[in-house]
Length: 493
Image (cartoon, rainbow, N blue to C red; front, side, top):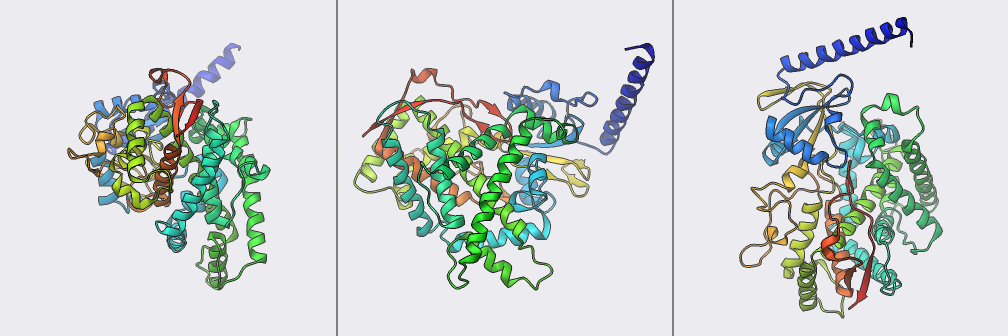
């Protein structure tokens, strides 16, 4: 580069630096929450370890308090850390923190549609409808429970085919919750070897993996730069388009066979509601909204439960003494001649505690999905300026020493009292809190309990290495905590 080129580069860099410093200083004058000093353009990203970002954020909170500012590249982010700060935001000032800021990878795909990405009146209409529809189809009632129980038996049949040989459980564990969602959305059950089903679950697994890569994390904060480049974001787009195409086929088939007096599933109910409101100019019930919401339910309702189960099996192999206690309680309460039910949960406090501890320990969604300040928010002694992205650290709550004495240890005793009875905790919030609490919380908790209990009713989990050598830390932390790939053997009981 010649002298003139170097001079031009230096001037451009200086302008960027001054602009960044000006923006940063203005934020401080507006009483922004404190935080580590960012670098121009890069922000605090060089200080973060993508494989251990939670430790970095814990240290920032220790130094600057439970409300602090960091910069992800040029993007300013306010972090709320700990139970008191998150509860104050989502409950005491819930209306001010209700607006969802979709991660850019989701926003590009959904364009503000769907349960995850929508806001305002659209979000209210779709969420209200979805909650009522799922409730009418048995969310938390016996009809949905029967579907999950039936799927648990299909899962056991597939697991029996492994014949105690070593295998990677990722795919099979994905199939079970995926089939439950298929049953709710479009009243279908797929065989585990069905080619279309294999393709769908394969795309879900791939997208879930890619969402947690450093490339997609960079895309979420620098989309204008990354979106024009080749990379894994294009693979996610391709997979989502194929899934939407599959869902559109289901919608067309449902329209051709729709009986308004006898809805079969979620899609039928949505189409009926759309027809009822065709003269309402304020209605948000459109084909695009149906595809987006169905995609949300399909993706979020499948891989999150599957990953929880993968983590759960890994933890129970790591601690065989805990697995033995689970087996003992299942044998005593359920036995081997009938399938577990949700009514059994109150009689199995130890199993219930193990399920809760799995969800607490893995902190599957460590930051919840981000929020957006749609106006200046006065929070504690600070101002969160309009347009600022806000992350809520659920991980910091699930690892709080005040609620869980040994927060970094896997210990079901966190949810048991001195008499061995199940003990609830206000700090247990893996599904977030407030008005945007996860829509599928009831279904997810039912699935994890019934699927895990049915697996342990029928099998003993055997690792391929000494349990002490199993790595139960997340492979990577991004949108989700992702478990390491592993194999195991299932010994029939």
